[in-house]
Image (cartoon, rainbow, N blue to C red; front, side, top):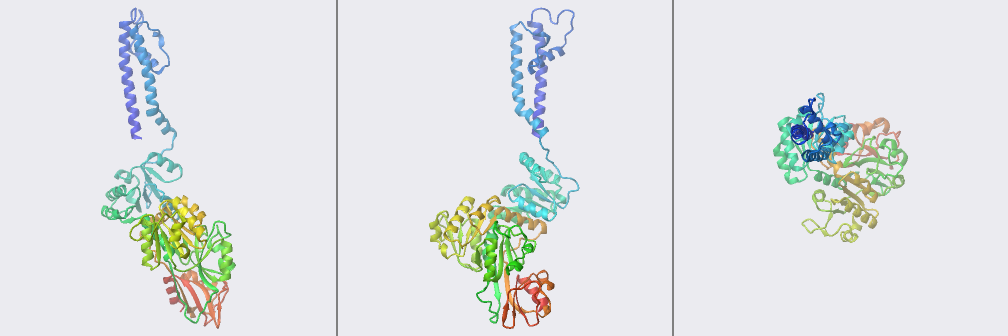
Length: 551
């Protein structure tokens, strides 16, 4: 806007100077070169008349009372004025007139927030991670403002409904215009170097406001910390952790020898398909236990594992449930979800791609003592099979038929989709955990046959949100499900519904041993008797709460 105002001012000054100069020349030429006295006897024609004729000639609106001219000198001057007028028009049209009209008709993006904007998040600036972050902020009723230095993009964002300010986040004035001193936090997500500059600027504008800096290159983390960043997020590291967590989450059992659940009672993972009859419902509305006789003890969604999952959790494509139940019950659930059922266990895992994401996955699998085979297109330390991941023979060389899971961590979304098709064609039962760069690629990767897909944008956006909302470090991925058998004297005489075990402890009763029988078909009205031995599933902390409360 400032540049346009300068162009308009320069154009008007140049035009005014030209008109005045030519008007003086025109007046002199009429007196010197045209035959007969000028002005004609009995008239008083001033310099203003000459200016009128010059303006009419330049703008091609007419020639006034002086036309036609007879002298070569004056005709030459008029020709030059005509050409000058045309030149001025074509010069002004793209440089001045069109921008002026565009600004007059286009959306005006704010250059500052309202004075009452407080406890908000300042985001610098828009990336594909922002949408996931904004969704989290909106769900927690936290306001935000995007600082966008690119005017055209700022207009597009503003028209799309984003809260945006047209300003450069590397300037103190812009951060003050966003009311940074009253903000909850600032997120810098442009590029590694620009983010460091934004961090320095933010600390100058409001030293006490927490700053989250997004860094692509892990080797540059220390520089952002030195600049003053309170938290540094490395998106590809987070994505690798999210992919690995789907494999490394453990189920620990302590059932004892006296309780034999037998081959008919299983722990399994089942993925929700878009076409299933459960898709679009919440976990509570699905009534999985009542309709299918299984217990949901955990769920993976959007890069996070929850145990127990909230009843409000939507069952949609990409949600994977950890369930317990009899074999026949699991088969009924499989038909309802249109999904494969993977028996829970930690078998051989193939990691495809050994970049930053793949290396993170491999490192975490090694820490969890999970056997793995790494595929990459280049020979390097840590790579077991060198080959093209879009060729079936590469997977056969890696032992795909013996693998329990495949983690596809390739950076190219097209390669991820094609590799997914290959794996699914070779082995319909292998669990496929895939990476996506953008949210747009997630649905295609699921359609190709993946069981679980994480996008870089979603994982990093949600992780940033966990920092700026709670101001806590991002939780690690070491999440275990513990299944134990115990007596619970404090529950004697209670029904499962009345005891509200899930709400109070976060645990789920999946079976009950009574006398010599093992009961697994437990409805809400099932009453616990003294002497019953309960099989419960929950997180480590949930199981401890259960034991302290009822045992």
